[in-house]
Image 1 (cartoon, rainbow, N blue to C red):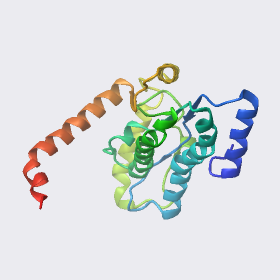
Image 2 (image 1 turned 90 degrees about the vertical axis):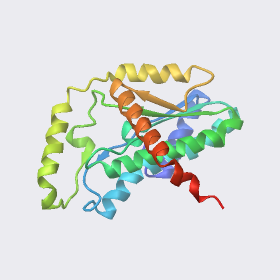
Image 3 (image 1 turned 180 degrees about the vertical axis):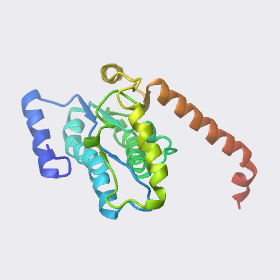
Length: 223
């Protein structure tokens, strides 16, 4: 299945229904990492990233929904990232933007489909021992800016240190998703990994701090 081609997605969904009779769970896990600063990533590189990471998922959901609505059941699980909850990762701005988009449309999707008995969950994994950090899964700008060379080299060295040393077990992540697919009231957000938990908690504390510190300004805008 070619995610960026709607006809290919349509044919794949039809084949699944023809073989199994219905769709119980959809896990949208396709995606790749686009590194680089916003200043230098080209328009084409940004669009290519959104085509796969965002529009590809939207194609699957759009083509599957008629079947899910008809059967009045199903669970759509969209894989975002901890980078889709906080974007405090140098050189990962565009990747984070695609994953924030996945997070946002999953929240809206859950509201859209609730009355049909269909569930939606967005999953925010931390670092797991997969091929994600390897060369074939990460794209870099075709024309990087020289001034960012040192910072980029530090980030690339950091990723090399993490690769093959990730704490997350992908089998356990899969089991966690199976678990939420079997319950009547699955979470809207599921964080996977101690690192994801810690980063999410820190983000929530930061937002809470800003919210309280600037409350006077926040509430000063009423007529």
